Amino acid sequence: MSEKWLTGTVIENRHWTETLFSLRVEGAPLRYEAGQFVRIALDINGQRVARAFSFVNPPDDPMLEFYGVIVPEGPLSPRLAKLKAGDALYVAANPAGFLVLPEVPDAQTLWLVATGTGLAPFLSILRTQAPWRRFKNVVLVHAVRYARELTYKEVIQATPARYVTFVSREGAPGSLAGRIPAAIADGRLESAAGLPLTPQNSHVMLCGNPQMLRDATAALAARGMRKHRRRAPGHITVESFW
Image (tube, rainbow, N blue to C red):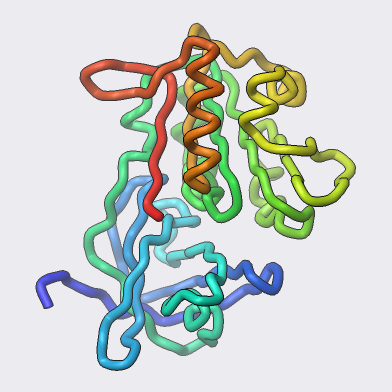
């Protein structure tokens, strides 16, 4: 096998809901930047089955943490969710991804916008010093279906970030209803954050389900914002690996 794999040991498997879980893993030292992802794997029926997971932990924490959702028909996630302390898994030796702050141009406000487990890379970023040194304001936006899926609240609330939540399938006090793209379009997101969202002052990083990425990008484009590229600096950074 050409890809190099490290063997990690599960220290904790935290189940947030019946479908959401977090694995804490030791013994697989890696160098990476906050916001990147890596492939983790199990051997299943004689084949190594791998999927990409973003790091939840900051790079200076030797204990790796991954946040996942069970895909019932998937070959890997149901098995990962059943791992217990002491079980082994494989971690690829080549983290990757461009959803990282060194790739982001300067702005007054950094918006970190996620759905579901797309929250993971932003948790890693928030737990570093970089966003607080570079940006006057940081806003973390997390959209889920049910309020019980608003995970890692204690981590987020321990940072200076402004925290805006969306819950789409039930009423939830303190959370906005509906979807992120609609709230960008009608101004509710700005109102909830108490900050303007314009090309002049903002950079938006998006991570989540592909439909949100498409629709949020379109809603931001309607405000005059464009995707960021190294050769053509912009206002929107997007990365999808599923």
